[in-house]
Length: 314
Image (cartoon, rainbow, N blue to C red; front, side, top):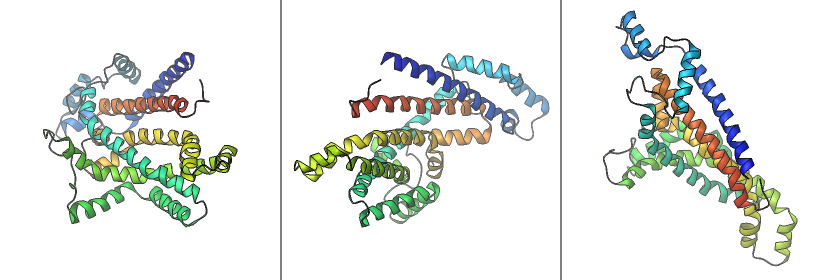
């Protein structure tokens, strides 16, 4: 087990080094000068050159990359050019809406995806299966911004049940008031991402339901619900857990569109504004943190396999 963990951590370090290299090169290849954008069109060339020198943007790329990598190794993600605060501080200030939104979205996606996938497999080929499969395909093909605007128009504008946008007053003591602002964005992420969980749960359950131990359980006279839940579903969950973990990681990194539509001050909207301003330190730091979250969730999924299926050992 320790040897496996050591190998995985070494592989994760290599992956993060590759990600850091790609993120640095992509940000530098993008057109636009952050110093010129910060100072505006009226700035002189001398002012732009002075600001570029202040942030080290006039140095050769290998030197900039080496300095940034050394600071990251020390736990310093850099200093935002536009926000004028450390990148780590900017990310922490925006982390709460993104993490709560991802948690609610994954919970809703599982609450929809797993039961629907099980029902679709149990009633394979019948009307329930066709209806669930059709809804899953509809969810997979629906644009998130369009679905978000539809929910906003119906439940926020017409019915007034939820706020149209925003995250409430930052100083508000009521935690539930913030959750109220996250309901509609979470429904968007949960419903759209549940389609993938439905398809994986259905396919995995169809494989398991034809196994000998399920037929044996039925031959022993066990109730159908107990056979499906205790014997079939537990063994079918191993590939589904992989999809759930990857979905959670994608929600953290890919909720930018939903956050922008609903005006949430999360990490996604921070990255979007940093890209528009060419704020290199924020882009690099945010993408590096998202990549680290992704690889850590993957490691957690692999370790969770042992809890679900005791036959799996590392």
